Length: 414
Ligand code: AMP
Ligand code: MG
Image (cartoon, rainbow, N blue to C red; front, side):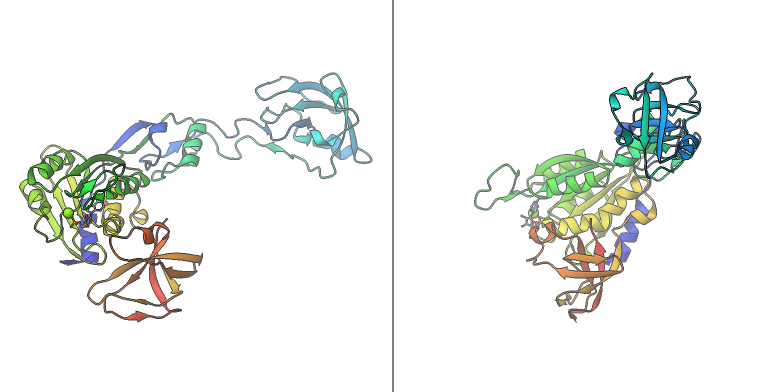
């Protein structure tokens, strides 16, 4: 059995970044950029109307008496329309949001400011406008205010979420250079396990780890490869492990503790997986196993044997698998682990005597004044206490009682 910090350090030292790849922008969601995205255009690419109304010369409005300005409408411009007309003193353009501001004009007066009959306010007509809040340059997004051609709008390391994908698209990045997406095979072992769609018969247990781990993998921007369920027979587990070793990471759950049918460590050994640790002084999740399958011509496969109990499996995923997947995916170091902080306990809790423990909790308040409310939780087979938890209270070993109001370490989950 090893200490938690030592186990995490072993994972960090073993995981290595996957190669960078050129991928289509839409295939890059959730990946970290390995090269910056450089814009090929200004944004906006030209001065853009931000309201439906009239493109005017600010000096005409300043010169108007009684707050009312009367102007000749020289052209109608919808989004997509362009004109070579120049707006001269006393003129304006009827303009829709998203159209380029014509030369000469520098502000937009919204259509709501039209006095009289607005039907006349088209090209060839005359319009009277009153805008009590007018300021020069209003309702115009100037060329290049958001970014300039040549700007690195997304630096290397940016993780591509919806906003980043949109920005990259606007900047003309049809393809981006990103970390390869880690492929994570997921295998559930146990003769008692049945798929979630089955109603468990007496003695059977639904495979909740499979979907749970697949979701956890996906949330890190990696690709889950579900391998289903293997019964507690060496040949069944061996065949599935052999398949899983083709992935970047193999996550196996169940069969790693000390029972008669805990066959997994022996199977890993026979499959040529080198053991780096087995059992970590932590609760929940003590039985966790970690090793590496090295081969000559390709990157190694990281192999995790997670405990079968779902809550233990999830905690081990967050402690050990998460940093591995983040490193493979070329994420910056500050993203490898869930963030930690300090919080005040809302109710007292008791630490475990022999091991550091994570207790699911609800964290409320501002980042510098957090309150931790431990959630009802019956132990490592109970996922319900975890479902609403946005954090853990992390207590050192020693069996101490931590009173309400005392400051404790917490881990922030999202
Ligand atoms: P094991 O680690 O194989 O000794 O399993 C510990 C406990 O976790 C047992 O009660 C198993 O039935 C349960 N368990 C194992 N694998 C899963 C799974 N994939 N989904 C839900 N429970 C599981
Ligand atoms: Mg089992």
